[in-house]
Image (cartoon, rainbow, N blue to C red; front, top):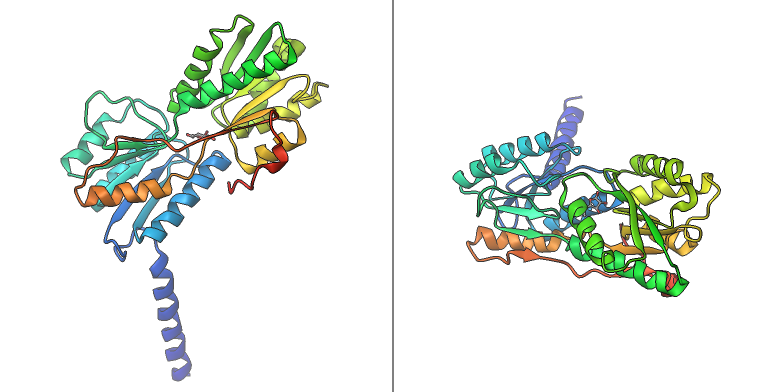
Length: 324
Ligand code: GYE
């Protein structure tokens, strides 16, 4: 009996030590660097792919990652940043759900001497130098690319008027503001284009469906185009269009942003016409930047990944698996 208990004890210690190796946030790292990262939530395939990429890259670079998921709430992100400060992590990174309201907590991090990296989204800070840099997509350019596609498509189809229903992302978030601005600034030059209304779909599939029902009730088949700020909302909207007896991709042009696998599959089926890519793979740049900051080296102020457009203008069967 004693022998068996000793064996079980040794086994338990062995298992614990193994799992301990993988625990996020533990100091045992190759670089000796601990990075606190506050993620927005799990609202989309993009977000889930972004979290996975950051976890994988932290592991690959030997960085201890303390990762917290804020379930879409700014208060949770502020609390997470305060915990990172109390823990005295080397570097803090976060994807701000909205742009305003970060000054106080960022001043606390600055006083504690902990550098901050913005990942994915930007902030609108009242004070300079609260953050070191931003690693994320050029959302304005994504809006421009979506509008440029629409102008080309309207030319190709010989459309004389183009009435657009816009489903936007989370209110006051950087991608919502900039995708809208890039799109509007570009269509403004084309007198055929008219946005019927822009409504907030919060980047969620369920809200995408609700917004679409609202649009169909109010405007019916007057709608020529749906411009949706992310794939989840687009995927939520499409069945509603079908329920209304219309064919998405034909009776209504559908333009989405992100480029996750599910949306690319729907593009291949012909129910989406264009998907502007927004890559969630920001982990590598994040780890390299965190290491530079720990070593007191200078970092680039803005890192934008390269992005492309997938559309029915090309052979969509050739699009490679997306990985998110
Ligand atoms: O487009 C959306 C996600 O901030 C780029 O957030 C990100 C956006 C992305 O929920 O799917």
